[in-house]
Image (cartoon, rainbow, N blue to C red):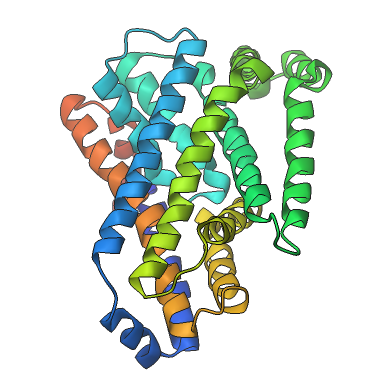
Length: 329
């Protein structure tokens, strides 16, 4: 458990430094003045919209488990397992969310290689959804369509690599023909590849992608709602476009949670394209990241705490070696 907390604390410290730099750059007094007249009920609304996205993403998780024929996991416990993956939301590309597969393996004995590919399918449908939102938001907006084209190319390459059997089969054969640890991992790799083809097949993409469009659209709408709290009425499609482009850029660049990248894009687009003053743009950016990124991390830790009360053995094996390792000699 220490190692997960350490990663989050490092990301949190990085976030504080980045956010502090944005505030200083915009002017502390200007940011404070913008928050003075802010309508805080809109922040509560943003938290609600982000939470609704989590419910939709849980529906995707359940859909994928059903596709993989994983049965017998009570819905409430499955919900807690899913939310626990948010603990490592602040990992590059959110790949740390595979943590929930490890939790599911410990709590309900579902082999981790069987469900880990769900994270890839989740990210794939999320990227497709974000690109759709960018395309919709870029209608009548010069320069926006290039993001949609670039994203479409990336998604197409990803789909080809996932669904084209030759590269995956070659990778499995290389593992099986090797010696040592890689050879021992070959059966798990084959199982993961089989699961990936199930959850990322064209027939399995439609429903999760639609859920992602609504979910990420809600978080983009949260940015619009926060802007109204500052008294600025940006068109809804434009606010969603700003949020979606920042989300995509933050996912592509390999930094924890897109820290620095997403924030800079949100703020600069608000200033340069929507003509929002620097102070309000910085404040809106900080609040939307608190309501989406950091709220998710907090929810993840709360879910994990509940799970550990229900399953006292959870993560005990991982925690003990870390405690021993850091014991002074």
